Amino acid sequence: MQEYFSSYRPILMGSKWMVTADHPLAVQAAASLLDKGGDAVDAAVLANLVMAVVNPHMCGLGGDLFALVYRADSRQLKALDAAGFAPRKASLDSYSEMGIEQIPATGIHTCTVPGALAGWQALLDEYGTYGLDTLIGRVIDYARDGFPAYEKLIGSIQNKRYQLAHSPAAASIFLTAGRPPQVGELIRQPALAESLALIGDQGPAAFYRGKLGEMLVRHSAELGGCFSLEDLADYRVIWKQPLTVPYRGYTIATQPPPSQGMALLMQARILEQADIGSMTPGSAELIHLMAEAKKLAFAKRDQYICDPEFQSIPLDTLLGSDLALRQTGRIGPQAREQACSNRFARGGEDTVYMMAVDDQGNAVVLIQSIFQEFGSCVMVPQSGMLLHNRGRGFSLNPSHPCRLEPRKRPYHTLHPVMVMNSDRPCLLFGSPGGDGQTQTNIQLLINLIDFGADVQGAVDAPRWRSLPDGELLIENRFPEDTMRGLSQRGHVVKQVGQFSSLMGSAQAIRLDRDKKLLTGGADGRRLGYGLGR
Image 1 (cartoon, rainbow, N blue to C red):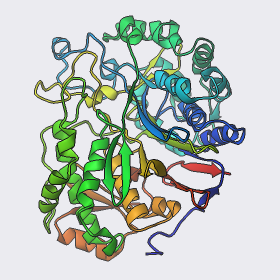
Image 2 (image 1 turned 180 degrees about the vertical axis):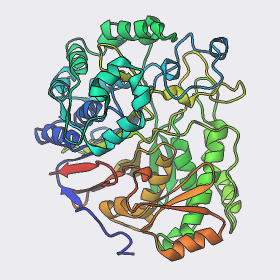
Image 3 (image 1 turned 45 degrees about the horizontal axis):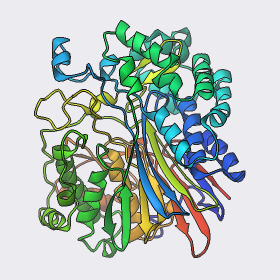
């Protein structure tokens, strides 16, 4: 077991604060804030703002976010839903009249109202000690003066170069001289710097009720889109109670629908029925059990998940012990097909995750995204703002629970995670990865709780990912016995690299209050980093 959880990076340690994020510049900025006594929420928002500049293919002003926030003084945990809704003019009828038969991958018709700006402001209004203007002032230089291009970003530009070329504003930044940048070449975003300065001066109103929003609506009209000024002005975030289930004496908390967090909890409820601690980590027996639990949970997810403001979801039944027992009984010795008609768009791997704990014991986990690489590939001219393509979470099938409707929130893959011991957090973790998010998160949960791995060992451990078509991606560090055993059980096994970015970019922080110790781990599969003191 010790070899299986060998760490390929040193474990992070601290006694006062800790932060992890999906880019070292974001970690550096957040750590400087925490070291001066800043709140965990301040640190998470600042980390996100930095990544909105240096991870433009993954997140930004034109995206959405979800967060879980724990406050040490009140011992309360709350969930923030800053997912955007469809414009009022977006409907099955209007899309049919435009000849759109399915939600496109890119373009203005795949965009919903961005919620990130409102989400950052809501977090700071509720808990922050710094204003949005102060935090934005720390990141404008990265947009104006530039940051060095890195391989993952360059690869994403290459993947979407033709779509980006259709947006002159985007092409002027990411395809200078008609080509992607080279490693180390500075990427400057002067229009984004001006937009950030405007937001710093006027707050989110600069977008939802001001100049930036007017620019979006005007460009939407030029492209035949549905946005109106009223759509932006009417947008509001929603504070919610987290969705929770028990697991081996702990409580797992995550985001309620329209997030897919319920799928993580359904997997945990099924797996709790098994004596996982007696199994060998990385064995075919365990991976088969977990992959089959995932298939059963995803079938229920695809059947029910939607915006709960538009359709009720039987969460008590879906997360109850009776269903978990029945689902466990359906897992046989051979792999089953994963068949469900209510499929969602593939993608969403391009997301950022960040976590922070401050010296007061406050904790936050935040996930933010523009969904797929460069989202809609539509950049609003003179704003530097790329719009997400979260509309891909809608269906144009009238019987689908996530059918497109005005002011409706689409299905979201995003879900932050906290594990509570009594009423205090003991583990924070999460990952980007689209459909793979719950699969990475359930593997982290098993590694950390059932096998007692340290956080960096849990993050570094080899991972697998089950795809909707039945293929099982598996990192080639697993033993040959595992590969062979899974094939014998009927899984279509496909080996990928030792540390594949398809497996997400996991982060984890353990809070040991008895020892007054914070330990953290960050994933080298992408650009995950962390710092603690």
